[in-house]
Amino acid sequence: MTTCFFCTNQGGNVLYNCELYRIVLVDDANYLGYLRVVLNQHRKELTDLSITDNLSMYAAVIKCEQILRQLFQPEKINLASFGNMTPHVHWHVIPRFINDRHFPNPTWGEVTNLDYAPSSALLLAQQNLIQEFQSLFLA
Figure 1 (cartoon, one colour):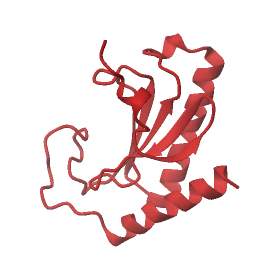
Figure 2 (cartoon, one colour):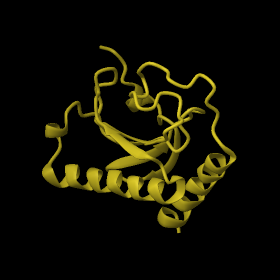
Figure 3 (tube, one colour):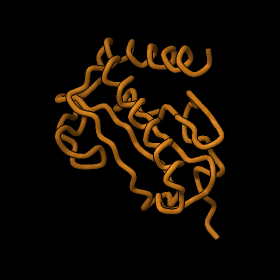
């Protein structure tokens, strides 16, 4: 049996953790603010969860989107739950910008901006994101 990445790794800098899920900040210099909401138990599909647990996780996804929109003011937020590479329920919440490395392509698609570097405003937003989670969930 293959070892599950999310069962053996946090998947990033944990900003919030509860019994059901954790919210992690992904270490990706090209996508500051990239969050994942990861189920804390190993389940492969959303339908393996109760409706209540799905709604709780999705509420966390929406809260992540709200915080990212407030702090980063992105052009768009990408939400995804694939699980092809890591069959463990998790959501990707990724702020996107017109000048980012892949826009308008998906983050794994063809690069459209080889010269992309995060602005100082995005670097500051990343710092504020960590503080925002600490004040919201750890207070």
